[in-house]
Image (cartoon, rainbow, N blue to C red; front, top):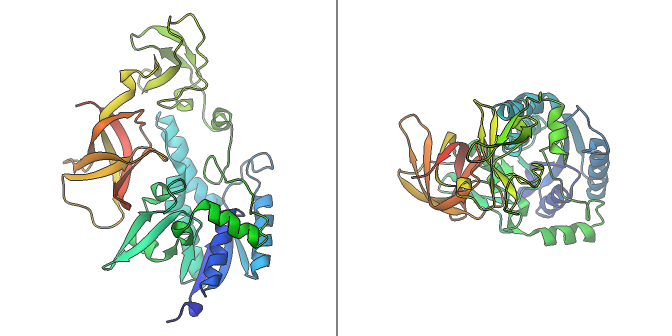
Length: 363
């Protein structure tokens, strides 16, 4: 089978990464079409994440490349499979990662299914990660550009999804991507990278959440239980947070900034500490919702882990408890382990899978 007979549908978002992805696949001899997904309806506007502007840019790129552009609206699927969960987790005082669920349920489920209906052999996206087949197993590996690697957000993908996906940007860096886009006259060449909540865009977070969650005031206290001020609702804060606490002078002789150290759901209290406080550090966590990209390892297993995106991988040992949850013991203390965030596991460049952080403690 030659590459020329393979039909690939690229998720064309109107950004520079997906634009160059489509071009690279054409240059490799694939039959390429594109699909633009609209996934958010509630308050789509030019101020936040204008899908109209993104669609116009996607059309310009598709036109330049001479490829067909399909459009689809996955707003219902996004609300049910990603945003509902996002809100429920915040109600529980946890800090979820919607980008992870977005990849699992929208980009590599709804999009993949739709693309197959359109006759695609595989889909492709502009993610900075690599898919490597090794003895019948598909490995998810880090992208070669360390500063842009997105394997963290892709750790819930399974073998079937990986076998039907391509990540052409995994082998190059962002600088090269922008150079290619500029050389080919793409309107997206200098377009700012999308940030914020997946498909919703960059927002003033508290104001955005306030549209969907009730504010239930409670107490902000220090580690000794001393009342400092009222908070606006426990869902609007996250462990390790510094900005937005607005704790003025008079509460301490120290000029050091205050940080959220703990969220007590039962009592609706937030515990804050000053500076690089010991209460911000833990060496052990428990995680649930364990997922393996390929075959699970033997336990206990020495590997590395990230408790947040952009963090350098941390050496740890993992084991599975009798209830199916995962215990992760780190070589060094970790700052601001946050319930609800994704724990992602690695052996070198290979992403093993991950889980959702449930609790933390010290041993």
